[in-house]
Image (cartoon, rainbow, N blue to C red; front, side, top):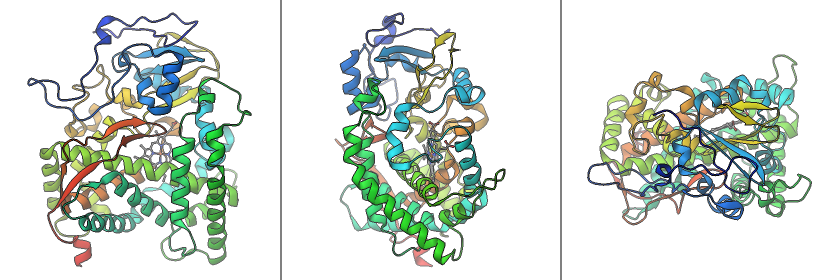
Length: 493
Ligand code: HEM
C-alpha cells in the first residue's frame, strides 16, 4: 500500500485541515484482539479524532501519548497547529534528514530545554553548537567500551541487592518499577560518586524524582508558545530541591578533587580527567556537576523503565521467559555474571531491544526547525515544532509486522532492521552517549533476576503506558516473584 500523505490539523490551523480517512479512524481494543490473533501486551489508546486546543493541553498534562493520533502508526507524517505549528515525522528518510544530514537545522526544541535547564544547566544533553561539541568530545572516553566493561561488577552487585530485596517480599506481589528505579539509582550513584561516604545519594534521589514529577509536566505555557522569560510555576516549585541537589553534588566533586581517585576510576574520576582533545579544555566544577547530574537524570529512570517493562513482558509471555532462563543457565551456569557473559547473552539483549521498541522511555523527541525545509514533500517553516514520536515509529504498520505483538526474535538478525525505523536512543551526533551503558546494565540485572525468580502477572493489575517526561507504566509493574534458588551464585562464592 502506498504511504498516504495525510495532513491532520488537530485545532484551528492555517494548514489544510483534517483529512483523516475513515479506515484510520477505527479504534484499537487494548487486548486481546480475537481468537484468530495472539494477545498483545498493553498499549496506549491513540487519538481517533481531533482533540482541539484544550483537549491537546489536557492530554499533554496527563498522558502525552494521548496526543498521538492513531494515523501516526500508519502514515509517514502528521501535521497540525495547536497554538504553534507542529509536525510528527515517522518516515525513516525524513528522520535521517533531521537527525543526521541537517542536524544543525533541527536543534532540540525550546520546550525540552525549558524543562531540563533548571536541573542540568547547559550540559551535554541540551547544549548546542561548539558548547555541545567540546562537552561531547570530553565525555566520550568516559563511555568507552573498556570503561563500561569495568562497571560490570558494580552493576552485578546492585542486581544482587535487588534480588535479595525481592526475595524478602516473599509470596506478596512486588512493584518491579519501584525496585528497578532503586536499583538503577544504586548503580548510577555508585558509578558517579562511588565510595564518597559524604555523598547524600538518598537526598539527590529524592530531589531528582521530585523534579522529574513536577517539571516534567509539559508546561501549559510552553505549549501555548508563551516566551521563555515568563516564569513557569511548576518549575519554580521544584527549584528549591534542585538548588539543594546541586550543592550536594558540588561538595562531592570538591571532596574528590581533594582526595583524588582510588582503585578503578568511576565516572567522576574519568570526567575530572577528561579534556576536549581539540581545545584541551577541561570542565570546571559547575560543568562537571551539570554533566554528572545529566548522567543521573538521563541514565537511571530510563534504564529502570526498560527493566520494569521487560519484566512485565517476560511475565506476559512465559515462553520467552523460559527461553531467556535457559540461555542464562547455558552461558553463565552458576557463576557470577561477567562482562564476557553479557556479550554472549544474545537472547536477553533481544528482549531488551524488543522492550525498547514497544515501550521506548523517550517516547517522543522534539526539535525546533531553524530553516525553511521540506520533509516528506511537506513545507517546514522556521520555528515549527518537529516531533519524532519514537513510540509510534516502533509500532508503525508500514515498518513492522504485527507491530503491537511482543517478539524478541525480530532482533535475531539486527541487519534486517532499518536503522531509522528503530530509534530508542535517537541517532546522529546527538545519539544517546549512554546507550551501551544502559544495555549492559539492563542485561546484567535481567539475567540476575530471571535466574533467581519466575515472574508472573497479577490479574487485574496491568500496567498502563503513560508518558509525561518519559514513558512509564502508571501504577507500577506488579508481579509475583516465585523463588527458583535461595541465593545468587555471587552471594554463594
Ligand atoms: C534505556 C536507557 C536510555 C534510553 C532509552 C535513552 C534515550 C536517549 C535518547 C532518545 C537520547 C536522544 C535525545 C534526543 O535526541 O532528543 C538520549 C541522549 C542522551 N542520553 Fe540517554 N538514554 C538511556 C540511558 C542513558 C544513560 C545510562 C546515560 C548516561 C549514564 C544517558 C545519557 C544521555 C546523554 C548525556 C544524552 C545527550 C547526548 C547528546 O546530546 O550529545 N542515557 N538518550
